Image (cartoon, rainbow, N blue to C red; front, side):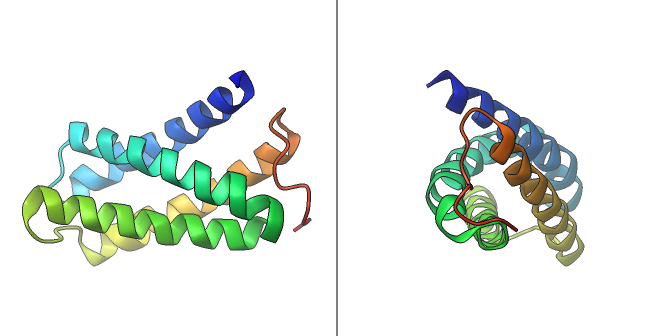
Length: 123
């Protein structure tokens, strides 16, 4: 269990930093709301992308799924907070681009961590 908590913490720090830096600058989302979005996105992406998809389909597919999940979670959260989506096109590109790079590297980290997910497919 502790090995999953460590991986979740690493993932949350990555997503949290990206969220707190980018979302308040490019959307009508406060830093506190960005942290809450990061918590939700971390848990959903870890369970679906990292534990289920990464071992079966590899890094590329898991990274694409994580980016799609992020777009859905951010879009829905922004809509729930503001009544419409306020994230600018530049904000979308920046957030999802930085996240894709971070997720790709995080998946590489998972292959060397005690969790050892992602061994089925090498990319």
